[in-house]
Image 1 (cartoon, rainbow over the protein chains, first blue to last red):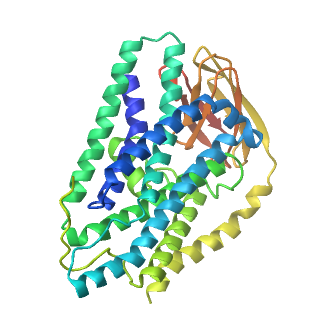
Image 2 (image 1 turned 60 degrees about the vertical axis):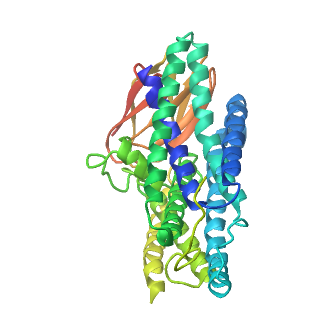
Image 3 (image 1 turned 90 degrees about the vertical axis):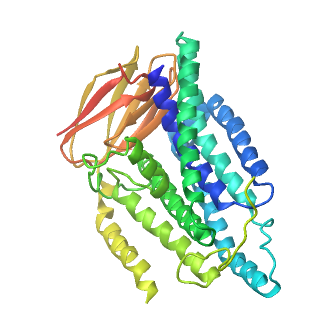
Length: 283
Length: 114
């Protein structure tokens, strides 16, 4: 039961942290709850489909289908995160100007929630499909179903609790800094995902490792520990990365930050609005 | 000069990428691990150092397994009765552990790189 709980917790944690960041980044936006729940629901459905077709996916791309699939899912999420940040860079300023001239509250309803919902959906799909396969294996192997389900529920609960903690933590940031912080978090999240995708492509033999590992800080902070795993998701921490992963991390960071700067026109990640933004209390 | 902040690491990384590129052309060998009754056979696999190798994991159980190595950052699902292959290295000499994540208590082994 504990073993099941730990595995489910590990898989849930990443998705839970991503959902927290998305919820914080979309604070005050109408219908965000519906969009995010929709993302979770489609992700779960997708996870089951992926699990059923696991062997078909694995056999694709001359046996490297899993890596190609995972890297593609990550890449799609990176595009959505990048788009969100660039959008915020552009429209954030317009919204701020509007607010200054007209003196009304920021209308945030048009924020591209689709992009963030897609990120949630893709995260749930990727992590969820492994949980489905794992639980299926236990069930098919004649394991105890009750103990398995209890473990799964414990793991899910613990992961969700950590996600909630992060969400509440981000919300303690003063409103005028909130979106600067969430934009930075999304930037780092995207770079970390890119490094993860690079890892899959190295494993598939499509990219050279460029020295593996580049460094070993597992004695200092293992990325299997809870703190290490949280940092892994949030900023892409890796205790034994391949050189290629660092390279791709830096390139992604540079590209998104440059796009944010070009479209946002400020040196730091753009804010949605400066000054005295009054946010609607979140639902 | 905000630009330099982003460009420097990028240039450094590109130079380093070009310098390391020849490793791609190295000869590649294949090694096989079998999963049976949630155990690896052999549980210790010897592979050469400084060489990119292909590892085949053959799951002869009927249940899915996830081949995972934390030190090598490998992660790949092997459905029941199927095989997967993945690329490793070039590695420095040493011992690198791997597990079957879905049956971590029994499915354990190590790669001995010499």
